[in-house]
Image (spheres, rainbow over the protein chains, first blue to last red):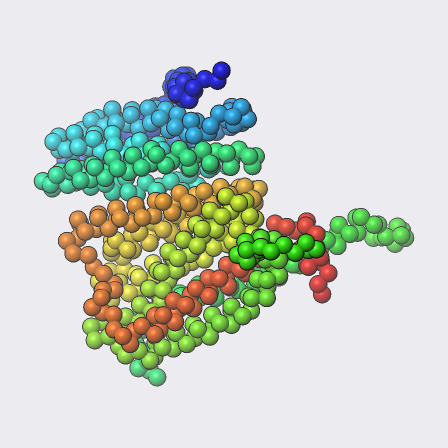
Length: 228
Length: 64
Length: 255
């Protein structure tokens, strides 16, 4: 008897996480990148806490978008090169499971660590403390969408070598709504308004992305694999 | 006529806009036409080469 | 061709035009006519727009940019929709002609988006005092340009042409789902930041005398799109099918 979908999914996520732990150095790359960004901005703009605090949200969110984007071109690369994906497709496992599992493990290894380190970035940039909870909430609701949409683009570009810039060109326009609502939530809070509407929009987008993107990622994987 | 060209003082904006519009659209038709010419030439050469390879000329010595 | 079955004419049309050779011959017959119609309509429309229509009482002559800006903006979205429909057909039925038509549309859509942005900026300078304002429509249009460029870049970076077309078609459909969300989010963002939105065209400024050139240009840009798309698609088709017998027959033997 074949294993159930839930079991397969868990096995895939577990495998991804084990592989990620084996390559701990790579896990730290996006975090180091974002740390550097938050250090470079004060160096460029001067250490005035007021000025930095006013644009801290923008820096952190744009930095997070770029950091996530930079992880995407390798997301399916090794699994394609060693034939793992091909084996899965031949053996009849639905590609949707791969897409869901990989989106989740990608979020666990990039979105979540970024979220956990955000208090550090916020303090580097002198962000007002009362905004931190909203920023964290916006990251919690926004970064899963980044992983979900990023998976489509990663699957579309899996057969292309040196796809870094192409991935950025494809994925960053799609990230625009997330950026607008997430930064909007914190800016609304800073302006004395309720961030709820923005956060609800983020949650709605995340839900929509979670239901739709796995199918697109699966189709993209099947197409990319059948061609090479 | 000069009134028409002056566009009420907005000549630069109006004529640049129309210039960009027309240039882009004309390029959109001219470039495929040029590409088509080059492509047909390229394809014919390729066919001729393939033909020559398939049945080599009878007097091999004359081939340069 | 011997068995003449009775078929639904639409199905028959799709089957026939789905054959590269038939598509190539048919489009070759239409293309000169389309270019002629486009040229006549554009000349007529621009004559109306630049000469016949009286100047606007508020914006004087600068509003004449509207007659190319608005049709281009319509086309930038219309072509995306057309491309997405063809991409869908290409993905579901794997019709090569649909793949090629979808990919042939992308550069033309990008061109119209580019024109929309340029003419918008050139109109914005005398109206708003700045070439670029973070207006909702302009911002969405800019994002649309990046999506077009992404699709084109993706199509070009894969060697296998058919696989490239299918991959880029998926990207086009992903963009289609995203575009309304992007547009809506940008609209919300600008209304929050600007108080009142600045609009290039409001219902107040539309005058009856402005309609004829606008409609003529809207039709002209559509025939232009079909002409330019076919011209692109025909090239892509013979290049891709260069080793097929029908291309050899049509290209190789023609004088």
